[in-house]
Structure formats: C-alpha cells, structure tokens
Amino acid sequence: MSNPSELPGGWAWATLDDLQAAEVAAMTDGPFGSNLKSSHYTDSGARVIRLQNIGDGRYIDEKAFISLNHFEELRKHEVRAGDLVIASLGNELPRACLIPDLKNPAIVKADCIRMRVHPEVDNRWLLYTLIAPQARAYAAERIRGVGRPRLGLNEIRRFPVPVPPIDEQRRIVAALEEQLSRLDAAIASVCAAKMETVRLLQSIYDDAASGRVADAWRDISDDVEVEGLRNGWVWRIPSDLTDGAKENIVIGPFGSNLKVSDYEDSGVPLVFVRNIRSGDFASTKYVSQRKAEELKSHSVKTGDLLITKMGEPPGDAAAYREAEDGIVTADCIRLRPSVCWDVDYLAVAVNSTLVRRQIEAATRGVAQRKVSLARFREGVKIPVPPESLQGRVMREVNDRVSKVRRLQEALDRAEKWAEALRRSLLAEAFAGRLVSQDPADEPANTLLARIRAEREEAGATKPRRRSPGRAPAQRKRTTDTAPAPDAPPSFRGDAPALATATQPTLDLEIPS
Image (cartoon, rainbow, N blue to C red; front, side, top):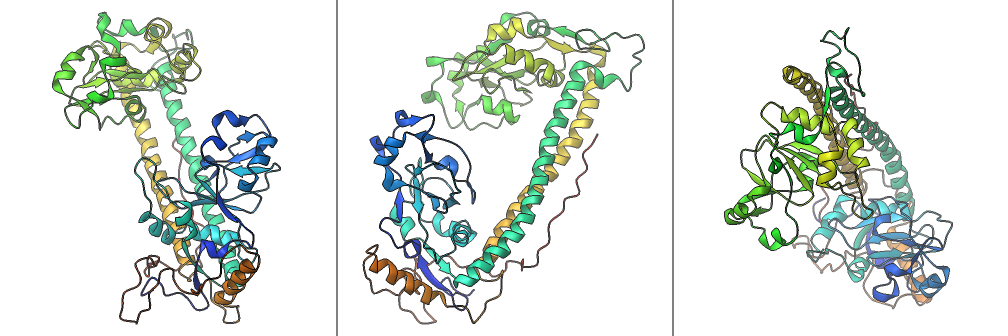
C-alpha cells in the first residue's frame, strides 16, 4: 500500500478501545501492589493469569491459584473463556492469547491486560491482528522502559487496528488457521528432529565414555566388560587426571573476592556457567589485569576442562580452547589435566550419562542444586581409554558429532524459515491480501458505528465526535501530504502471495 492509512475496500481504522464489549471496564489490567502478593498464592482455588501464561498467540497452561475469598475481592479483574489477554511488559509486544475454558474462576495479574471483545468482532481475528508484524512494528516505537519495557493500559487502549467487515474477519481467520496448522505440523516435525539430535549426541558421548565406540575397529575377543566399561577403558578420579597439585582442581572465587563492581568492559575475560553450558566463551564481562593477578589461582587457560557445579542438574563440561587466559567465576570447576590426557575427550566423558549420574547423585540443595568441589574430587569417577587410543577415539567422536551438528544447523535454518513464513502469512492477512474482498459485506464503518452506539447506550464510553473510520490521530490531508505520525506503519507491498501456500516439507535424514 502506498501509505499507512490506506486500507482495502470496506475496511476501517479503529482502536482496541473501540472494539470492547458494551460493558463497563471491559478492558482492565491486573491488581498491583499489596492487592496481590506472593503470600496470597495457594494450592487451589481461583486461577491467576500471569505473563507466563501468555504465549505468542497461544495460552500456556502454567497454574497459579489464590483463594476463592480473595478472588471475590478482586472480581473486577476477572477473566473468562474467550477473553483476550495482552502482555503489557516485555521486549516484544503486543503478546497476546485467548483464554480457554479453565473450569475455575480466574483473574489477571499485574502486567496483564484483559480485554472483553465485543461479540460482533471475531476475537481470533483480533488476536492474529495484534501479533502480526505490522502491530509489532508499531508497538516497538512506543515501548518505554529499559529494565522493564512496557506498553501501559492507556497505550493499549489507543492501539490502532485495521478492521475488515465481520464476514471478511471470519474468512481471514479460516484461511490463516488452515495455513498455520500446516506450518505448525512442519514445525512440530522440526522440533521432534531437534530432540532426536540431542539424543544422538548423548549416545555418541556414552559410546565414547564406555568404550563401545571402539567395538567396530578394535579386536575385543579377549576384552571383559568391567563396571560398565570395555575395551580397556578404566575409571579414574579427577585428581588422577592432573599432575597431583591441589591447585589443578579449583572453583571460582566467592563473595567479596569477585563482586559485580569489579566487572569491566575490557581486560581479562570472565567465564560463567552459561559459557560452559553453551560452549561459547565470548565474554561480555571482564576484570582488570590487576584484579586478574589477585585471582590468578582461579585462572583458566587453553587446554583446561571446565565443569558447572550448579544447575538442573549440574555437570555440563567443556574444553577451554581460547587463546586468551581468563578467570572462572563462582559455580564453575576448573580442572587442569596433565599433558597425557586429551581435554576434549575428558569433556565428552564428563558429559556422558556414566558421569552425569554420579554428579547428580553428589548434588545437594533445593533452591540451588550444587555439587561441592570436595564431592566432585572424591565422589566422581571418569572413564578413560588407554592413552594410545585417545586420538583415534576423538577422531571417531568428532566425525559423528560433525554430522549431527550439520543436521542441527539445517534444523535451525528450517525453524527460522518457518518463523519467517508465519510472519509473512500474518502480514498478508492484515494487508488485505490473504482472502478476497466481497462488496456485499457490511462495511466495517457500519459495524464500528453500531458498536459505538451500543457502548454509549450501555454507559461504557462517552460520546465523541471523531469518526471510527479514520486512522488514529490522522490529520486532514490531501493526497500530497504525509500520513499522521501516529498512524500505523505501512504494510509491506513486496510480501509474496501466500493464499495458496502448501504445507512445507523437510527432507531430513537422521545419521546413524
């Protein structure tokens, strides 16, 4: 379209406020402050709809309850089946979902906005409108706040939407749901395949740690399996893998030894639990050279083995292969193996089920589950092959892992492609290009005028002069003047025609 306020025939601009049901407080946010605190939550009763329940277009069944007596005090925040709930807090807004039949009374919590949609507006159409790329682009320019980015209730009330005739709304929903259901099936296949790749990687680690990896290329006729190991693999405690010095197995500094105030924007990199889990040691936090010297007993250098001592469960391991030395932080274990051991193999062995089970058994705590350095030193054994076989084992492991990694990269690309296709479908729908227009449909202006009159009669709004058919804050203009700054962003004119899109297929082969 040539400008933001131009719409297909029969469509009109409205705000969310214009599309509410004809009742007082059809749109409201959740209770703040002392009206609803963590101490009010119970094991059963009335449901509380929180940000965790609002997926991107879908309801997530995360349960939280308050007592029925407390629900009665907060009834003005009640939410019912079919209501639209919009997140007002987050980096990507609006995020919304429709409430299913919960079988329990329910309220919305702070940072959630409940909208009771007028019955002459298709609530599914409105949901898709709010999560379309055009709405996201409009909202991105109006989100305020750094630590807690939000769109307030008043901004949500004024949020502009392009309204088609009601019959066209229903046609859009039917076409969208047909296409999205096919896309969801493809995404489900991708997700299942990604889960399979995780299982494949684990089986590779397990084969390497147990010695099964050598079955295909080593004579095993005289080998006897001992404690779950074969082909000459043996158990070693962590200190057996070092030169014996105590400082070869350490944890990161605690308490005042390393504080947030010590962090710098450059200098010596810090290694966190998240770096070990991801295997990515690109750091955004550093300490000065002087501070690093104070913490040199916690240093990490290339060839060291790093293990997480906190997590659900702890025990993720990675080899540190960075050229620049760093400092490990709290909840990280650094093991410096002797030169006879391949650190990449040791990382594979610690990540195997054989070792992870031991670490989990040595884990303590409820709120934060951790394995202590002492329990790791004394209570964990690591399976290792004969030194002469380490290189060949890792060549076999690397060959298998590289095949799985290539598959994972293909699945990631497929997932991104599917998300791009979803955005294109929504963009097409709300640019008026997904279904055909029917001149016989009642124009949206007529629908909006009827809703407005009904709401005014019910006392749910005050009379006003502005026509609901205009784009919000639209000034009088000629064809030569620019659109109003508050008008929604222009719809892409180059989006592909998707009304006849077919179900995507993914030819993916799982390596054995």
